[in-house]
Image (tube, rainbow, N blue to C red; front, side, top):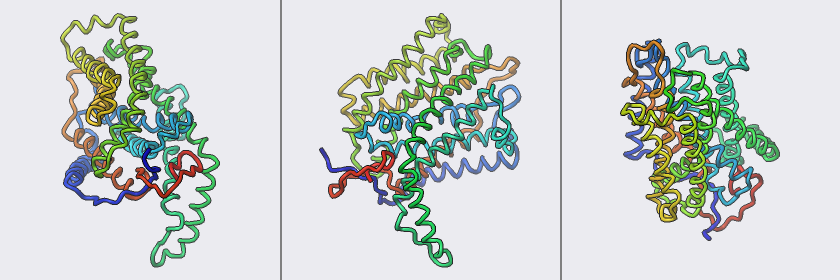
Length: 413
């Protein structure tokens, strides 16, 4: 077995040709975002009274929440099921989830017409509202994710706080605060880990409830009473593929060798979960006899077929192959197909399947909507790169150290 893996800040040049392209895309998105706030949501989107939501809700929020599921699935595997052999992917998965949920919250903020009232759910509770449950759970879970990230901050800065000039007097108090937080979280982190897993299962399923409420406005291929369960299963099934995808992208970006021994074993969990999701999806279709809609050549039938065949069946077969699990390229493709399938599922549910009762035209996202979404993704990648270069997140071989895990979230400290 290789040397002990220790989370370490990565040393690399931040600006590369790829990073510069991401900066340009992010800046372009920010320009359109500024136009949204200065001139109104109608100035940069194709949203109207018939289509009150579009790409920002379907992709930035619904798909973003699902693709951030790697945080709670790896937390459940590594901490609750005590699979410490997967500790090298826990911190990167946590960071991806934290940044993902941050941009989900920003996406909701941007999409609301009167964005300055986003604080209303904090004091105006409506226990019978599925949207309220989603909002509260997302806010609490995002807070939990930031709390779970604190040990990486304390590990990085304890004994290293060195503010210059007039702020020098804060060095000792800040160091003392970091040490107190470190000790406190060492005894209570398990509470936040469990809370994070529970909260995730709640709002992942409740996003499906939102579309159940839409009733006949939803196409029968997607409208089903078990949609909350399908949303939850799809989120769980994409958790590990998202971790694999992120790990391989990071390895290539920083010119590191991917941890194939860990990723291959992690990929072994994907096929059973993906199989359960497919069984429920097809079983529900046959029970409701909605397969008759696949006999018609429509946008809905084509999109449903692509979603299931390309996004579920093909990667399921790939994850059942030992050759795929051993090949970095094939494993990356399989993970990417699952991510594509779940993202397309959210787009299908919130855009393709949704038809307002009194619509006079179809909806297609504007250049502004696409630019903002692409800009958000670019900013997320840029922030991920900055975080792993500042904080001990990515694990590197360290033969001189021995694992003395104080608590699971701390990785190899």
